[in-house]
Image (cartoon, rainbow, N blue to C red):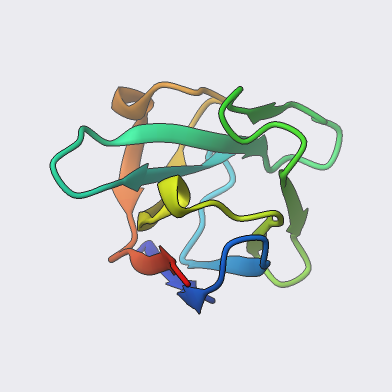
Length: 124
C-alpha cells in the first residue's frame, strides 16, 4: 500500500528557510514522479515542483513563482524527496502536499496518491 508522509513544515520568518521531506512507502516500480503542490487559504492548489524518481531520469520542474528560491532533490535509497525552501515570503504560506504519479508531470491530475500535507507559515 502506497503511503506518502510529509514533514518539515512550520513557522518561519520572512527570509528564512525550511526543508520539506516526502517519505514514500509501498512504491511500485512503475511510479516515476513526485510532485509538490501547495494550497493557500481561499486559493486553488498550485504546482510548486516535481522530480522524476528513476535513476536515469533527471527531469525536474520548479514553478516560476519559486524559481531561484526552492530546490527539489531526491534520495531514493530512502525513497524520500526533499523541497528546500529558501528566502521564504509571506505569500509562500500554504499547506504543502506531496503526491505520487506514474509519469513525470507538473499536472495535478497526473498524480494518484497524496500525502496529508504539512503547514508552512511565513510570518514575522
